[in-house]
Image (cartoon, rainbow, N blue to C red; front, side):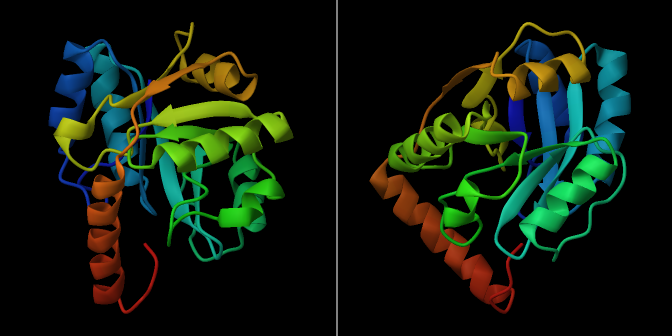
Length: 215
């Protein structure tokens, strides 16, 4: 399962739903779709994926006051702009699973708050992170005794499947249970320093275009 995928329902992603599902089918991969502050693409993909025999977990990457929080297995919109703690409470109130993604990423990570914000798991492998940032996230997850999650954070089709979790599961609930309980094997790649500099420059330009507002 590539647990962190964006589609065209995110303003900064180029991945069409049909292209994602075809890729997943061809590569025997499931996907956790977590568009920025949007749920409709994920819910639409779940219906189409079921017909294709592909497992898709609907989610949202919610923008909180501190940074991003992933909401998995939700079918309602989780509003942005709340504190990370309030966001996690809202996710759990609707039966979802809250995961902290890329905690040490500039602009969109929650930073040191990862040590205290309630969550069900922490993303310890993200292909858009540096190796160092991923290792720091892993250290926090181990210290807090939280489950491990992983995803490509794909915004383009060529990024899909570059990080993922391997689990023995057949349903959404079984996948998330395996992640939360620490039964998921994390696999993936990290970005080199030069790639991170290019990524941060792109992120900063987008940040400026939005009037210095986070996604």
